Length: 160
Length: 177
Image: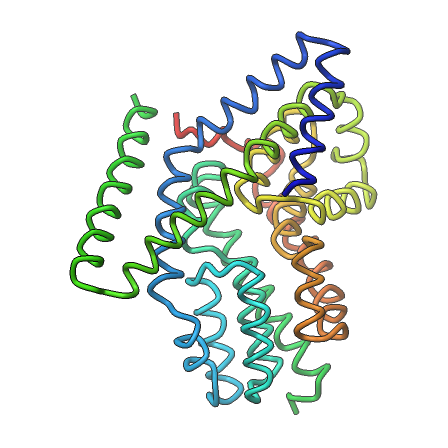
């Protein structure tokens, strides 16, 4: 985070002393993009907070533990699509799941959908891509996650 | 005025959430209280992350020449375009909140649709800090395997989507106007 600030400030100062007009335009474009997404951004933040607040970590732990390969993978993919858990929470959680004997296959379905499929970020995505394209992209993400999960399962010898 | 309408919907969402949080606090409904704490902490971390990230997108828009984007990320860039899309995605901060606006800027400067969708999905799965986290909790072989399978798939999906939509498809500016 500090790095991003330093980079942005240094580059902006550099830009400012090279070409003021371009720098003003850069700031203006940054602001208008931000202003454009602000309302829907607020909605997405609210949805994310609710999703993370209502779906507790131990709920996920419960959901994914001891469910068997097929059911676990389906539940994992569903949970990963609906939940909005940041990486720094999701991966330690996955580590715990692994320790509890949850198969890699299930964990891969969960973490990959978590990253690629976003039900709560859909309102934002819809604004940029349109509802149809955003939907297709998310469904494709789900398909990718399932293939990844099968490949991981084969790799770790969990699938016959 | 669609712009005003969407501004109103943001306010309504906040107001409803505020009411929900107040009720939760009053009733001692713990998941509701936790949601409110989440909102505060997310807002705080986004406030620290988004201003410099958006400024960088703006600077990119001002300084990177159209020809540079066209030749490296355009429809004739071939494998190089996908390579740069993934490298760029790996260094992203702010996730989809920054990746989508950057897609808009990249497309205006001539990036091809296949490269854009690759970038968008790679920004979800290839970010470096996240990958380090993954490898340390799930093991390096898990991470390598996931990359080996998901990256070709992400490129394949992007190409399929690009040919389905055709190059006339434009990313919108996100304001809903």
